[in-house]
Image (cartoon, rainbow, N blue to C red):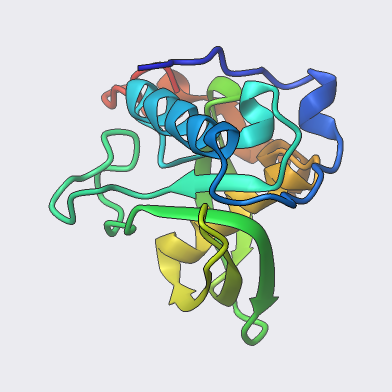
Length: 181
């Protein structure tokens, strides 16, 4: 088990565009994915991107391995299938945008309302270099957009329209435990 320190907002690695992965099914890539998984599970994250642990590569993971597992940080959200997504490409479907609360392991203790496209198509590669794609909506689409933003040096507070909708989790949600949000 390799739980890594999660970089916090302001760290240079979080503010730069990550490099594409060029070699697949390598020991180093498998170790990176294991480190991401261990860290995400330890922090109860809905997802995590490689730049969040200081690795500037276009790799994200998200979701739950067990379909019945609810994420404690988003207890009312639909379950998102566990996914390793490398070198992602996102295509937004339609113009419908939904505002929703987001948090981030790199912005601990805070939440904000962020507009995200409601539906999208994403494509990419798994750790073995196999291509795959999905058409998703709702919370699944939100998680993909949030994690892929990390690969372009974008953190969710940069997308908040009204800063009145950004603040500490325990102030906005006093009866909810976001567990090191």
